[in-house]
Amino acid sequence: MSGLALLLHDRGFKITGSDATESVITNNLRKAGIEVNIPQSRNNIVDGIDLVVYTAAISSDNEEFISAKDKNIPMLVRSQFLGEVMENYKNVITISGTHGKTTTTSMISEITLAANLDPTITVGGMLASIGGNIRIGGMDYFVAEACEYQNSFHDFHPTNAVILNIEEDHLDFFKDEEDIRNSFKKFAKLLSKDQYLIINKNITKFDEFIENLNCNLITYNGVDRNLKIDETNKANADYTACNINYDEEYRPSFDVYFHGDKIIDNLKLKVRGVASISSALAAIAVTRNYNIDINIIKNALNDFDGVGRRFETKGNINGALVIDDYAHNPAEVNSVISIAKNIVKNKLWLVYQPHTYSRTKTFLNEFADNLSNVDNLILTDIYAAREKNTFNISSQDIIDAINKNYNYKNCNAVYIEDGNNFDIIKNYLYEHVKPDDLVLIVGAGNIEKLANNIRN
Image 1 (cartoon, helix red, strand yellow):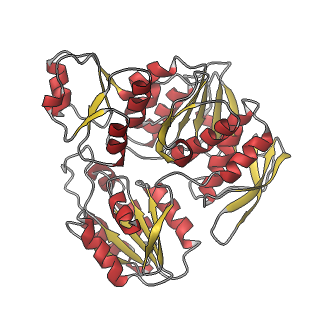
Image 2 (tube, helix red, strand yellow):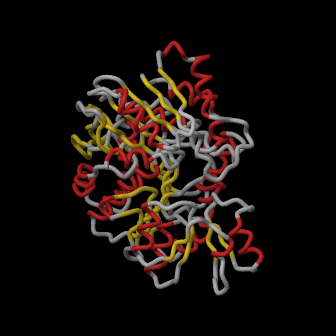
Image 3 (tube, helix red, strand yellow):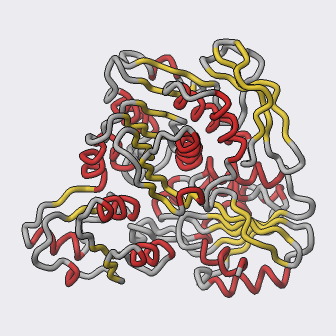
């Protein structure tokens, strides 16, 4: 929403908005000259507004939403409006998937910037090279994340689209994984016969998924659900990664093959983990489709050092490294822990803020299983986001599931009630963390306040 607001502001529209709390993002909007009201209130919906654009996370009982309806102001959900914006651009690259969207979008952004394509970019994290989550460029290239929640990406108009993975999430909206697959299939069918879908060949039931698509397909051999890449067959997909190695910081290097022929030798990434290889392959496939020189692609990926809140180093506690990450579903949490276990020298700590009651309830056992793969786990209260606790769930339920089913892992798991008062957790960490430990601070709510407080 903030990126779209900045884009419209730059185009000369008068923009106002609101949020529940102050943040770095609201401060940046004000610095740009946009009026931001805190908190949300029906009084913010004043006469003279021509259009209200709202996020899919807003519920129908939101008082601003109700006020706009009462005043008969035209309204569009963000995805609908963004879809209309996209129609003004010649090339629209949209990146979808249950996870990995922000990193992949950022990699594509860096490559198109290095190639001087002057892209307009909207990304779901803070990208240092563009000074935020939005870049306002020319009208030839638009690079944007495409979220599946509430089928939002069905409103988009891509010319090139990426599908990174399809897994269970947002089950407060989708019925099950098959429902999610159907949503992604409908997204893929937005592409016409002269357009391109770049897709991970390791998506479950891949052959079934691509049946009856009208577009051109470009495949890459990305990670599967077990965070593995099969590098034994150089021609397993259009783009494959082989000869994969990791340094002491778990940063990968690998060769890239196209139709079995090597096109990039020893690509070295600064971002960690096997999932970063998958993102890089997708980015290479997209940008080669625009005939960008392979050396420009390689150099841009070599230089890419990540995006905010994606395994981001924030400081240290008692000589222990502190890492901040946005992960909020089981697969993402598992990926973050996997990276950390490859670099930790002593004990691994995880401070996790569960995100939404529905997700916590739906994936209770998966969260308990994955979260218990650390030495020390601290859970905060659940971050409600758009929800009310009609699910009769709390972080204590995760602790109970760990103690009942996973206590053999020797994870010391605690739930600090009123844990969103982050001073309590900060003091707990300073009392217990030892040198050479590693501290992960993870979640999609406001848990980054804890990480930022430690850094400062």
